[in-house]
Amino acid sequence: MGLSFGGPRCLLEDQQADILYVSGAMSGSVAGVTSPGILTWDGTSFSAMDCGFNWDCVSPLSGGGLANGGIGTMAFWNGELYAGGDIYSINGEPAYNVARWDGSAWHNLGSGLDGLVTRLHGFDDGLYATGYFNNAGGQLAHGLARWDGTQWHSVFDFPLLSGPDLNYIHDVAWYQGQLYVGGNFVDDAGRNCIVRYDGSAWVSVESGIRGSFSLVNLLEVHDDLLYVAGAFG
Image (tube, rainbow, N blue to C red; front, side, top):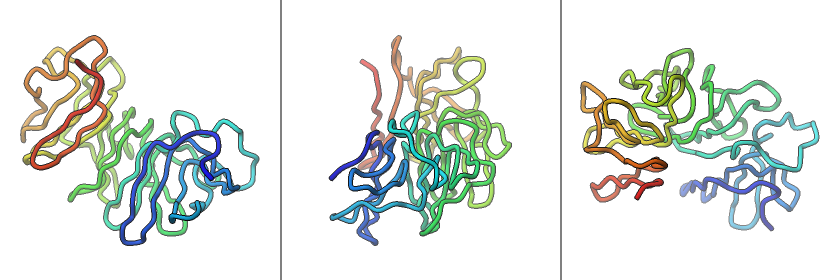
């Protein structure tokens, strides 16, 4: 038993329901369960989650799995499961890279995000999304946005840091009362791959992460320390 075609990218445990959510680029399981991008595992078998993503429950699926890694991130917020990645349809209807599971079906989050979602985090004030997008629900967002359960918001007027058109943002974390953001960016103010919001402005974190091919992929808070993972020396 295992996954068919593409591989997994994210695992998320629901301890109350004793279920493991598995997401990625797969189209289903080798046991014949079809659920593109996301499945549940109960310790014995995989199960579908409605039609999964980018499928109408009817059309034949290609053998290559989902593009761009499929569903690369999941998070719980406000008692519900959210998924993000490269999502362009839910049950054959247009979708916009992030979705909510109500226990039986997937739903859009308003007009969603206009580019790939790399990470979702549930914080006290909302669901945060990072990625390669410029707009969130019609709001200019530059790769960082917050969903309050009803609508999308920009986050502290997050600026355009890399290139003329698009930020490449990979993760976000609250640490000691400040919001930290990591990704692949360098700007003239010395904000290199990691920045923080100090309450009034987005500022560098010391000299940042420097190097020709440096980037930050993950941020994690543990035992009152902020851990940073990525490509750097």
